[in-house]
Image (tube, rainbow, N blue to C red; front, top):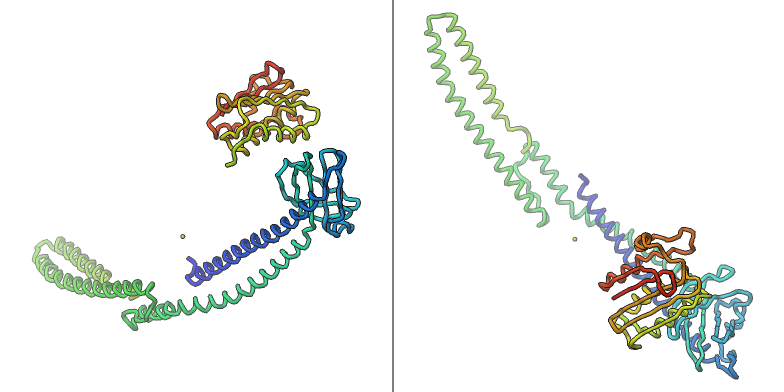
Amino acid sequence: MKSLRSQLWRSAATVMALLALSLWVIGQLILDHTLTGLLESRLQHDAETLLAAVNWQNGSARLDRAGLAGVYAQVRSGHYYVIETDDGRRFRSRSLWDREMPVRHLAAGDQIAEEVSLDGGETVLLRHAGYRKQGHRLWIGVAEDIAPLKAATRQFNLAFLLTTLAGFTLLSLLQGWRIRRALRPLDAARGELDRIAAGEQEAIRTQTPPEIAPLITAFNRLLAQHRERIRRSRNALGNLAHALKTPLNLLRQEIEGVEDDTLSASLGDQVERLRQLTERELRRARIAGPGGTAVPFTPRQDLQELIEVVNRIHPGRRIALDIRDTDAPVAVDREDTLELVGNLLDNACKWAAGEVRLSLDLQRGFRLRIEDDGPGIPPERRVRLLDRGQRLDEEAPGHGLGLSIVQDIVRSYGGELRLEESEALGGLRVDIRL
């Protein structure tokens, strides 16, 4: 078993390491959140300035660069922007020079930020946002070099490492001194145990901390009981030895009176053997031995935006949308529904020859139907598509149908998922009821 000193030291070192790690993680999160938040706030401000500078004149988009910051005119200054409009116009900052920067076509009002590596190895924080102005849609991507942010993070890590090492060294010295001081009474008690074993004293007299005092008291009590039992045992054995002598002497005298010398000698030998055996065991018994521790789903708007995204991914596919009953929000989670419909549309477009139909009937609850004019699926193979990771054709691009995530969403709503043959288009038909 490991020593108490080693266990205390290991425990203290573990606590200090966990504390240092926790402080570092918290510090990293706070620093990253603060710096990223400031950077995103600045990018948002610049995006709003760019939005104000874009106007449509005679049906054509124009960008007034007069009010833009000068850093966007300096080649590779670390500040960049790209603006794309729905009429095909594209405006780039001079600072990009010969490099390209992607812009995501998000829905109006949506925005995301991501780290992107540009040509030349420069890493930037790129903010994508979709807007609607003067009846037109436009998308703005604003980026800024995050090298200063990374440098600040490295400086923080270095300062934290040096501070932690210094603190760890100081705390280690202090903890070692405290452990030695706390265990000093045990060292004294150990010395007294040696003296007890040597018979120089009868109990431990060292004053110990309250956590150890009951153990010392119980040990001293056990020593006292042990001494008393030895004393009683020896007295009882002495009395027994004295009591056995008389019967044995009388038995020997009776044997001497036996006329048969052979029998007398044999009985005398047995009595003597009994006497010697009794005395040996009594002496052996007298030996004492040494020691002493959600957003609703808005069908028409959300599905139309989703279809636009899918159309860009799968150009050449015609997606027909049919929504019955209402345009009001539906009491199902928006993200769940977009995930569900998005997966099904993407799969349908992959296999469709040219046409996909999406029907949503809200008159009888939530009834979704997606069908395509693709090759379809034989009935015996449809069940396999619901297995996680199962693919219809290993040579098809992407991840195949893989409808298990759709099935999980449907099950979470207590719904039903069916795969059938489309009577109208001839391909696969997916029916979902929530």
